[in-house]
Length: 227
Image 1 (tube, one colour):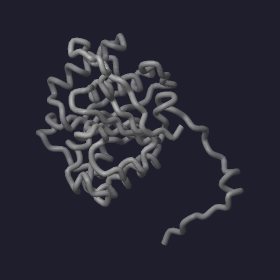
Image 2 (tube, one colour):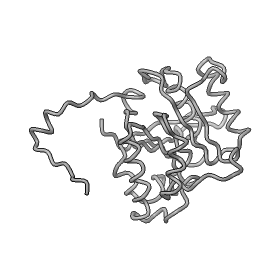
Image 3 (cartoon, one colour):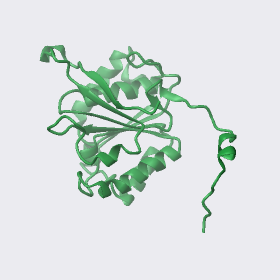
Image 4 (cartoon, helix red, strand yellow):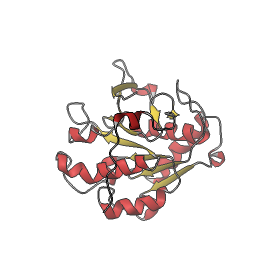
């Protein structure tokens, strides 16, 4: 039986620990767990794709720095391949590169896998995703409702298996970004327990004066931060 290690405060405070590092400085830490949510159509996928490509290239993202290029896995449970291809090319052009030049960015798309991806809310499904994740440092889940089918969204206990997997990913040095939908009241849909282990929760929202002709334009509201 494995013994749980208990340390005195002095032992813990004097332990040699690596300094805190960021994938995107200062809101996306290494070993970070992040949720980005919004109402439908605001721009979650556009935001997340550009974030992932910035990290894969090691180029600044909006006003924030990306200290170094990292391997990214984008798990897409929603978009059709033609739509995702169009958005990926547009995001690449935003950074001034051809999509063929981005070597650190991988996509796992549902339709390319005959419409079948494992349930990330079940242990067996998580083990299948683990094989795909391998050496990726940043994992983007787009989106939670199309990748997790077990349990009830509003029940706190139904989140336990998923939360344990997220903490396991953090323990392995990985950062996970979850895309999720807002409910009718504008808050993140489902049980609030989902946010307990997260470092950062970001809400995307249209500016008050937004016009459809402006394209992808939104405000970032940081609802939870630990740093």
